[in-house]
Image (cartoon, rainbow, N blue to C red; front, side, top):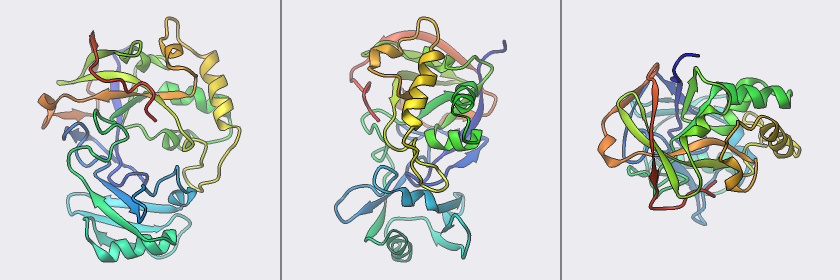
Length: 273
């Protein structure tokens, strides 16, 4: 089997909306540059995301990050509206408010504050074979449908299913590793919430999804897996931490992955969703 390597890189400029697939990604502050740099927020201060409403799955977004443009439309078709991607764009806020039928504004942060784990990072890693394993067992959705449910940043190939779980240890112990010349620390498996059961194209919820996924994970658990230390089989993808020293470096398609050594963590993110 060849060395593990990066086969997909995806960035999610607006939290909860569509990704953009890129051939390389620059490291920002505790995250990939542009990833989850924007978020939709309601008047109550809470995110407008899949945990709150399946309506987010009906909103299609495409981007031109070099020009700072986002195009929005209903996923089933209709008019495409183009906006400058920035906080304080009242036309964009009005479009989002009308779409969700509640007052929404788009906010922008540059230091990873909108990540699911603001104190660390939300760069997540999964192997293609892990997605394929779950896809085969659920047998109801396309592979891309499964991929979009888990919203990983980095997908790897050249390894067996769930190999990526070598990138974390027991709670409180991380794993140093490198992707190309970028050093990272694997922190924990990503505990899943109520978003993966939602169809990424329609928002329809599959009440059997979590149960089937946990059954799939249990039967395919790698030997010597540390996943049991995290409480359940309802985990997929690996949370990582990007040290400040890595800012400005790039992860590029084809970069290989090298595991270095375990390290003690100074925080406990093991139960983060």
